[in-house]
Image 1 (tube, one colour):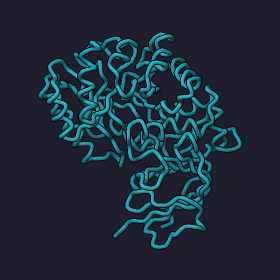
Image 2 (image 1 turned 90 degrees about the vertical axis):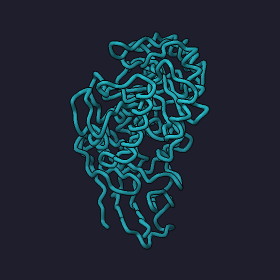
Image 3 (image 1 turned 180 degrees about the horizontal axis):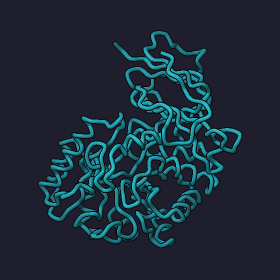
Image 4 (image 1 turned 45 degrees about the vertical axis):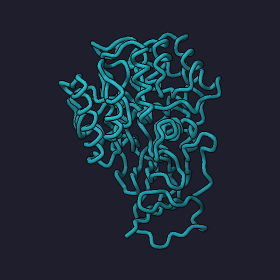
Length: 388
């Protein structure tokens, strides 16, 4: 039997699309986990619904996407000896996480056979197990010396679609990294590069020259993870390629603003995507993506509806995902939120533009409610209600 979800009385519908961030609609229908109709309730067919949510006038947006995490196994990170960090992040409105490498696994294998085995296993266990419903796109091998083209074909054939941060392994020179990135791209594997100073003992500086020579699809934490490159190198990266510009919570926030301003001047803000780069030495940031949205909007003078696109639609397009946009056929992954109680601002958008976090009232993944009122955000003024 088909599952039909109807969400009605939506007060504000954010699309995730920078070119049209606000949709004229108050109702959304999803069938079997995919968006099937968007519009006004009076014009839509809500008959046969198996689930109905009254949004009570709150804002609905595509679920947020964390473009840069380092998971290990299940909902546990040995980096900070913390459990349920993924569940906590769900309560921050994030419905999809993208691994930049499972680097915090104790004893992480660095031989070619072992690193391939780890990547394939990681891809499988997060495909088979979603902590609290969260989509974790994992299995991101770290490049090590000795890998050959056939290894990338093997990984792709096994379902691996991501490379971990280039530069975290033994491959440190741009020429070798470029060859491996090209092999990965040939087999449909997307790549990200570490950018900036060393993140932990044993890692290395990756400067603008190596980033450009390597030619990855995403410039990982362009604002540093933690230490950023000099301003001229950040501006050079923005100006000299078309790769995704990933800004992270666990980085240099001044460099984040420089990246935003440079992308705006280039009229290329569609390249900006957001991540937390956690778990890391800074810990876990359940509200990290929301905090980045509020920071970039308030300090960067960016309309909140555009800033939210950095956290869902831009990443969807950059990463070629079926989530992160309100569009027929896309996954029914949503965050329902409202202005926080007693927060300044006339509405949720103005409140975010003043630097305030919204209150999360519900998350939905593949058309199924995965969390109700957030235990981590400030309380929302209004909350949605499951009525069927």
